[in-house]
Length: 206
Image 1: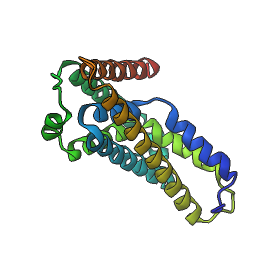
Image 2 (image 1 turned 90 degrees about the vertical axis):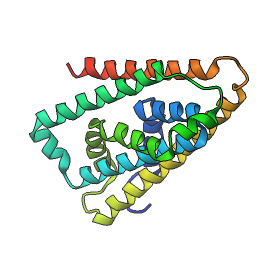
Image 3 (image 1 turned 90 degrees about the horizontal axis):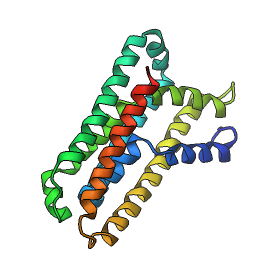
Image 4 (image 1 turned 45 degrees about the horizontal axis):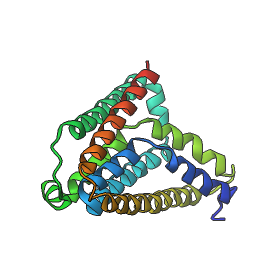
């Protein structure tokens, strides 16, 4: 379908990739817990936009440039690790208000979009993933429009999955809103998870 080989497996692989907890997922859930649907959706559009940039870069062959210049690749990785730890530190130290509305006033959707976009772009391993992922489902005689179709599929599938993540996360936050201190606990756990993820990446890259 759409000149994509093993179409069902292609869609399943995208969903499985999305279900693996990563910095993007943590950023989405953290923003949703802090500022509701508007904050979560801001991060969603940011991460999807960042992934689209990397997909486009992979298609254009920029992954080869990163491979040829490992210093640039390493610098991007360490910047990403530092940024994740910084977000985690903020979640650990920022005071948490009892109402989501006051938090939404302090941070606009654009703020969360920039956060999601930065998280996505500071994960340079994504470009290698897309570089290795696309050839699995493209025939040697495929037309260029096939790669465009694959990019659209990945973007829409990720967008729908992450929107569902925001809605479920927001519902959970609303159901637990009456529990004393639950927002603070959620923020602190998200902060610890982001810092832990950043440290894991740092150890893996040693």
